[in-house]
Image (cartoon, rainbow, N blue to C red; front, side, top):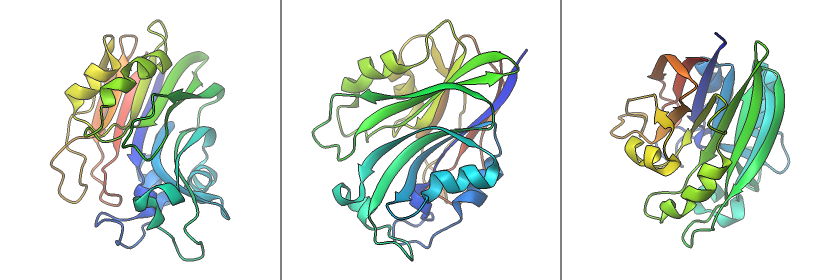
Length: 241
């Protein structure tokens, strides 16, 4: 059977666990500790005048950037406006990405709508097919708005963007909802495979970060990574198919 490891982390734009006034941490070190074949990232900071978190992680850790999507500009989101690091002016993108150490066969960004009235960002799924010992495996990531918004309205678009049922696949990211809600949102044929609290990282009381797989995938191991750098703890799984 073909095997791969997969992880997901909300980078919180390089801010620590104590909110947007917290000192910055090293996002490369955080991702190195997760150490997976495929890594999904959310809330990566990509300033206009620098390579940003996504390219920094990819170049340092041997990943290919399969696909990225800018969820919000700094100018349209209060949280993003507060994150300027030394040397930049706070202008840039708040992004998600799929990074892979495995060969990437194809990748695409699928917009997810409709635009929710109270959501300052745009939503999309970044989807890629990676080659695992000659066999295709589909991976997808997103960052969803808070449940205070009618997120259920996004369900048809999310389900249409996920890997087809006949192909082994995984869907991971910061979904801003409990596990049973994520399962309802993506619909039949998908199951969540990591159980444990991920938020807030320093003293977690809820799980909002999830990995779901379809029926073609078998789980070898899965876990919440006991890391306290971002305000979310990462999730990781070893899969085979």
